[in-house]
Length: 248
Image (cartoon, rainbow, N blue to C red; front, side, top):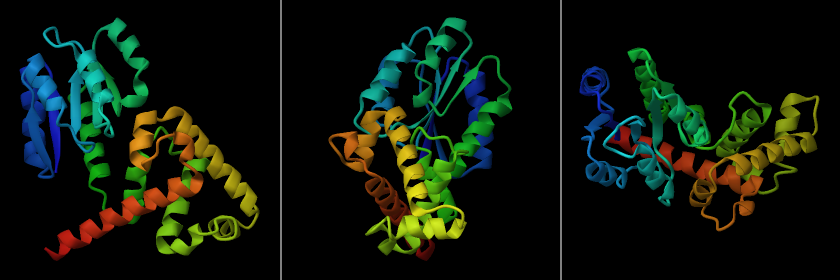
């Protein structure tokens, strides 16, 4: 179960978000943070990667940037952070860290904007199909979902879930099958597209996240085979967990 953690001075905003989501979604445990540096740091130290954090960078009594740095320093995947600010200088500074946030909101923003983002995250955290699980895993990396490389990787994971033998010899297995499905390209083209996408992911995704996710010392160890097979393992684990829940 995920937690929604709100660090905001506007208590009316917190109450409104709290009441709306409590009434609508039972998958979320709501946990607000008092506007107090010590309590905020304590809560942040317990964050899980499926938690949702509404972090207001305009709070006077809390150094939100220091809180954010504490989250980054942990040797664990980042939670879903929605950054908020109404100050031009702060907004500009936040852009430098945009890859670490799920989203940023500039004040004033409609109430529905933040609700829509939270509901979207909940859907990603609680996916229902194998394809949804794959998308949820890929969302953890700095990757653009509309690119051909993303679609190839998502397809490669799905095919490997259906037949793990394809991963043993990717050139004559996975890449060949994907090329044959298209008809107008060869396996080398599929291989090149996937390798290019993974190089981009390694370049732009937080190195600490990459190392902890793939259990490597150097991100250069993350080969296409390791990338795809690791996601396959994580999706399989989640599918098995869902089966156990259904039996209970």
